[in-house]
Amino acid sequence: MAVQPWGDQGHGMAKPPASMPPVPGMPPAAPPHMAPSHAAMQQSAMRAATADRERTVDVLKAAFAEGRLSAAEYGDRFDAASTAQTYGQLARLVADLPSGPMVAPQMMAPPMAGPVAVPVPPTFLAPPPARRTNAVAVTSLVLGLLCVPTGGLLGVPAVIAGHIGRKQAAERNEEGDGMAVTGIVFGWLSIAFWALIFTMVVMFG
Image (cartoon, rainbow, N blue to C red; front, side, top):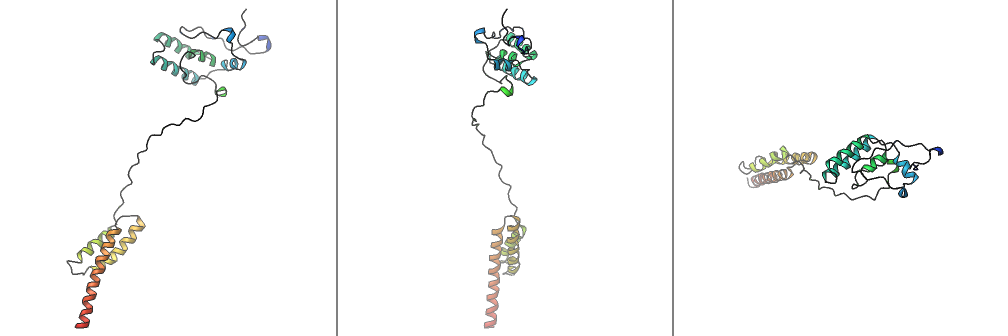
């Protein structure tokens, strides 16, 4: 009588679930001289979960898509994976296929390799939204430019609006500081012009 791989029943070891019937195209079990260790037998006899069966089916699908399995072999192994109860039964179904999702309990998983550098795709950042232009600064610019055709009569309003516009633009993070400065410059030139005219009238009037 052949010795079962899970040991003698008389030594108190529980018999694992019955092995699956042979599946056509599936690799045969290991010969007696290559029998797995006690720990490996315990791992193979552990109950498989639905997620383990699904991972095994994923490996079979990949092998079928790559032409490693015929349609008949894929169908037979797919049916066997759907009804497999242990990790050992699932492992036999993918033993002759390239490594894919591991069919092993997490508690017995092999040590993980070192971290693998994964290239990160470049991130395309959207340009920042355009800042608003302060309305008072625009007003100061317009008043300053109108000082020339109006003879400098709008100089004082241009200066006042320019200082207010610069302050608001800084507090609200808005554009328009340059416009406000231009309005202030034209405003002060107009004020200086009228001051000069007034001085000349007083001195020579």
